[in-house]
Length: 348
Image (cartoon, rainbow, N blue to C red; front, side, top):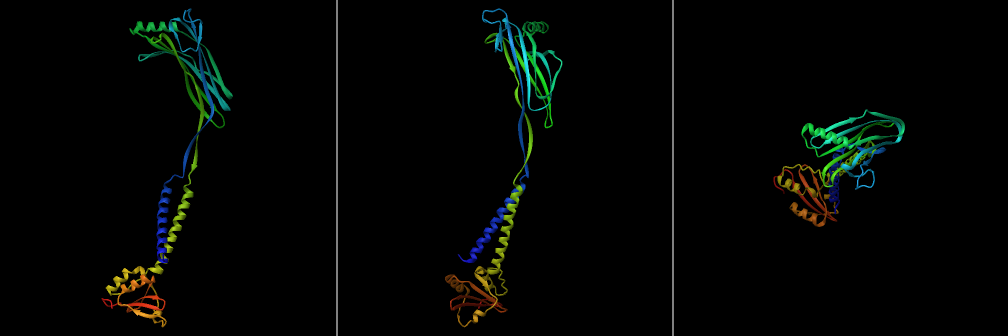
């Protein structure tokens, strides 16, 4: 591969790298400088627990008179139900903790109505430290009293109420403050007694509860910077380097093999010179023509000179003055020459 083709390939490579790096640079500019990373860390826990004991009327089915935390019990042998509630808030770091809470008792008839039967005043517990806890142990549910309320409602409204729910809820609200955090949150725990008179198991009270057992998290955002700036320098550097190489190689190529300006009114020779433009090397002196060591061989047409150049793998030197254009191929001691007159319409 000759030097001319090597320079051509290098120019194409430099141009390709310039185009690719331009695209990468543009894409990189559209990227964000940073993104927000969301993170959470645990700093505490909140727990609550309902416990209940069902007192029974004397019965054949049960040997005990008190049943603790059972799934269901037959309604007609259930007497009073003793309910206790325990709440606990634990924080990793000490701080000011305030907890307020109230107890609400509701009667719920599905798809018909909800009735609040009682609601206690808001009570408060506060401390400076890592944890707060309190216990409510004086809650008593008298099933017979609720049955009497249901009968009164049936008499007043004409409803035939078969199933209903007694719901005991504890609504808690805590505030936690220290030098790093300020947190406020609400929670609800409940114990439900579902009176199901026509269930598959019979006339029962089915218990359902929602105890708290959750971790308290603190969320924070980190600004994470991308490598946009570094890649901008990288792609920009590649772009500048490849463009510099492209321009430099183009200048070298034009000086060596291009930039031949043909000034002639001879259209025939002008057309041929443009056709073989890539094979021409312009020189500024015809001294080699008068070199006595070279045997001159004059040719009648440019095509023959081009063929000789291809066979010998030699360049075609071009020299022009005001009246003529001289084209030459040198092979050892031979000089193949073709001359054309500038101002004639046809070649000589």
